[in-house]
Length: 260
Image (cartoon, rainbow, N blue to C red):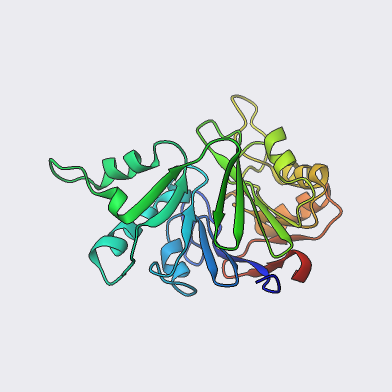
């Protein structure tokens, strides 16, 4: 419904492995009765069930196939097929090219390929991919992470949320985030690399991306082990004048017209 807020619930934001009190990257995005699991890093499935069961989830969207963003798809598979979860149809899963085969390669234990498609209805992302999941309109763009990786813009109820996934600063992300109500952006790197390809944001990069996109607010996530969340927020704030928050596990943000 138009009066239902667009909500972001942080299931976890740690990298590259979960901490005692913070799972890896995972978020629940909801509006009204629609529930979308965005990234499925280690530990996020447990936290997801505080809010919605796998049986009632509408879809999953995966930014890329690094384990700290996708590993809990493996345990979700067992839940969907061999436990107490009951669904009339497979769970829609939006992910990078090769997602189904990657899951099957890990899950297959004998001569027959594991029936991944019986658990998940897999839809492969591409640059400019559009999907409608209940009340949520999704637009995905390819971003710069050294492997196939995507950011997503999620719109509903007059609000817009953009999630960077993992990426270096890039034009595709900035354009996707143009004028969004909230940018959920990674800040993994304490500093830019002196050698090799940049594949993550620093906190300063995060602030610059939010500023260039004219985002309404910035939520810093995926903060690396050589930064504290407080440092990441402070450094991003030096480059962006809008409100800056950290994606602390358990935090809930109301986005857009009803946002705070």
